[in-house]
Length: 398
Ligand code: SF4
Image 1: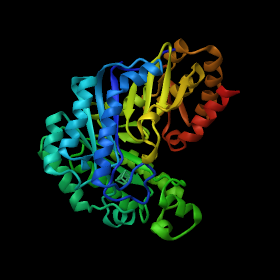
Image 2: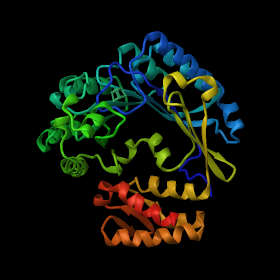
Image 3: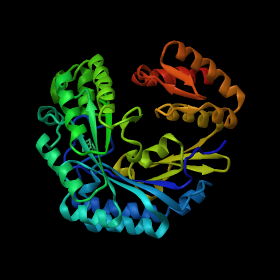
Image 4: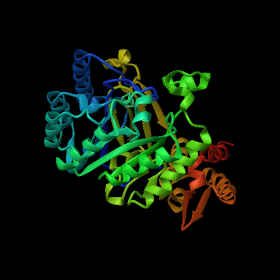
């Protein structure tokens, strides 16, 4: 067993969990904080980066020094001051060797990346900005607390491209309050014609971790919960996105991600291909090689708990069975699917054979394809991917 990887170079995730306002649907560890808190946090982040070698040694994990992707996520990392961004890059430079062609991504919200920060970021090597647009329809954006309009989004994308950023992507959400097939069509049409190179389409998550989710579950009216479309419509909107985006150079390569091959996200592919990555900051997750296996660890998701002693705190050893399960459910997220020969080579027969039986059943139900020595999800399978993964893993666990 080994960590599967197109490349053994490390991916680094930097969590910057600060936002200008909290969106009602957001279930991330993020919030509004004072400038002093942000400054203190940057200091702790750099301490954690400097201690990465010690942490990995303590966990018995291999920490590659060569890095080919860095991802600033959040939160809204573009709210950092240029000097704070410089400080974080300096810490990364002290501890890692960053490839000349590394993919370096900064998440932002439309209208929340100042000129001086953009200049600094590009000077430091940022070559990809991912914008949390969510909708190009003003009523839908306002309903969930987004601070931008369609006009501002279009202006921002045009500005970033004109500044010379080679990669500008955006996230959209299917299932927002008041969304209809027509309004969604409008968002997709704008997104595919405005000069973006990458699109992520997520389904609205209804759970206890967001204000909107809790209100929907309680059957209430706050946060425009009564405007959230039925689940069936959200599924139709997702299918609409898959059909429409493919006609506009946005080829689906993962359940939620669409781009031409040369614009795919190198960083996110590391997660699905189980390549080594390390995360720094609040709620950041890591997976590193350890001997023949791997180890996962995560930081706390509450700012008050993110203190030096807690970092790399929750540690999980990835045994062969877990590695097999991860290979299945992460690999199937990608349209390229899983090469079955590779699976048979790497894992024990008692894991692979029951899974093959489950795949045959899912192929009969038209939820999966098994051809050319690969397993893949069909479009229907992608819509109910959690059920498909559940069925596969059930067989393996027996
Ligand atoms: S900007 Fe992003 S991270 Fe911040 S609250 Fe909104 S969805 Fe969450």
